[in-house]
Image 1 (cartoon, rainbow, N blue to C red):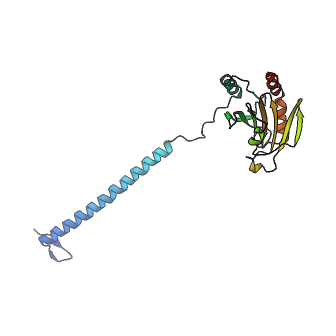
Image 2 (cartoon, rainbow, N blue to C red; image 1 turned 135 degrees about the horizontal axis):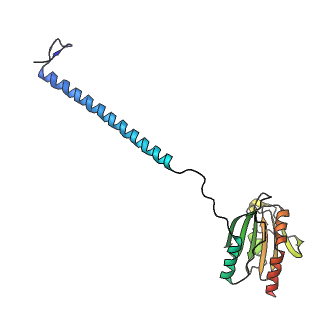
Length: 209
């Protein structure tokens, strides 16, 4: 028996029935597609949240401290020569200790704990008189200062920004090598470091005799 449609006031024809069922099927498929799409989006968001929340948080692991004495000893063994081990405060953080430069130089970079800026101690192996000028980007010495009986050439840099932020330096000959103490720390801090190197400078000078 044909279905009576209220809007028509009569039974619907077979063609109208087929059209109605087709439209219903189309709407049903469209709703299912939307539902499936929504479900897929929710699943994707859930996976992302699990990944993000599951990744461990926290500060990156601190770099292990540099053992200057061990590095100096290893380099001395490798080069078969005396390598200085600056007797500077243990509380000073060591940011680097390596062989570098066109003239091989054992260079240690410190961050003094009682001052701003940085300080470097460098031992230029078989370095020429011009080596400090090269390191200091052309800065020359115009004075000297005596610390623990050692005469040091004094370098005051007028434009630190042109010299890698180096504002003050002290340099002296030590046998075949040259020692340079420099950085952006105050002249007092740099002079204190140079003063502590007196014994090392004398040792190198004795070896060269």
